[in-house]
Amino acid sequence: MSDRPGYEPPGDERPTQDSRPPSGAVCRIATICNQRGLHARAAARFVKTAGLFDAEIWVRKNGTEVSGRSIMGLMMLAAAPGAVIRLAATGPDAEAAVTALAKLVECKFDED
Image 1 (cartoon, rainbow, N blue to C red):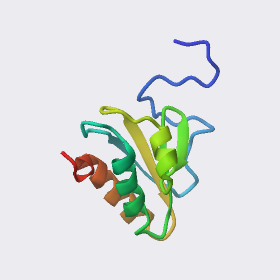
Image 2 (cartoon, rainbow, N blue to C red):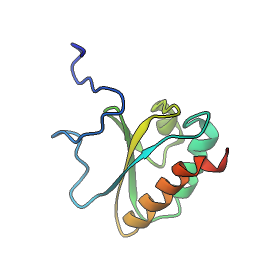
Image 3 (cartoon, rainbow, N blue to C red):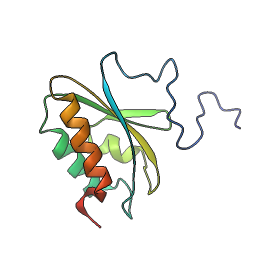
């Protein structure tokens, strides 16, 4: 346990009042399983895939949430192998976007 305000244990993606996705958002939990984690090339593939859909996309890890359309934001998550992330999306293509992005993560960003 930590005395730091807002601390969340690694991998803890249970919703709290301030971390719930917007009403109607499609969400999925995914585990980073490629050898190098969510590094620049993997983040670029994620953003490219996200750009195919008419949806607002967010990625959350340990209390930090970033746009799924930002390479720098995704890299800022420092999602190493084994990290648990939450994918959330709203919009006409939300379900398809979350499904495709979860598959990309599960397929190790087509790297390994």
